Image 1 (tube, one colour):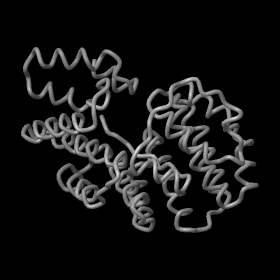
Image 2: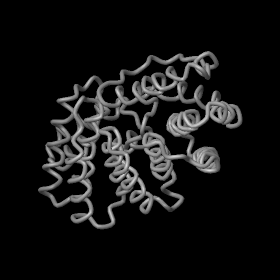
Image 3: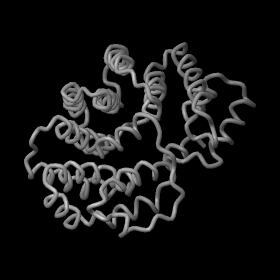
Length: 284
């Protein structure tokens, strides 16, 4: 049941079935594994989700399952992006714990990425660039293309935020990697987020170049696939695209799904900058 949630990034009825089963069995470790996926429980409130994640973290720590405890803490922290208060210190402490308590942690690239996003959203682009660069050292294999692209596109945002000139060939390299590296994974929503962040940065540097990339890489088709395939993040994508009025993207796509809400620091950052940095929950 939990494998279904992990594979489809969707709770459906599986999460409720798993929750009922774990409670019937009465095994704390099994409950902790279900609580890790609290985000997918239908209609769960923010505070309830955080409480379940904290319970899971405590159980996992008591059983010396430090990697999964760290992932729980990561998922607690990334919910901060939906609020008006992000603690860079808490993200840095998580990175330190992951480094020293679980050397070789599989999700280390996720952790560095999220630290960088926290630093970027709080106005420290130089520190964010350092974190994204460090994360790339953990995302060099082909199995880490999703994380690598998040780090690369987030670093682009940090460069642009800090008014660092970016060579045009860097945009081509990243867009080619998105096109060729992500297509086989069938992840149109995440691909669209990567592409839109890259296009926004390009457009900020040169409107003509940004428009050229929109057409060359058939971004309209990808955005349409993203809206058609995703139920959880449509609001953030819509908000970002709606700010690019000069490109008329919304006139060329049909939005059939109900838009999800966007709140807190994530909403403010999109509205203020047009950028939508990618951050990761971890259920590895």
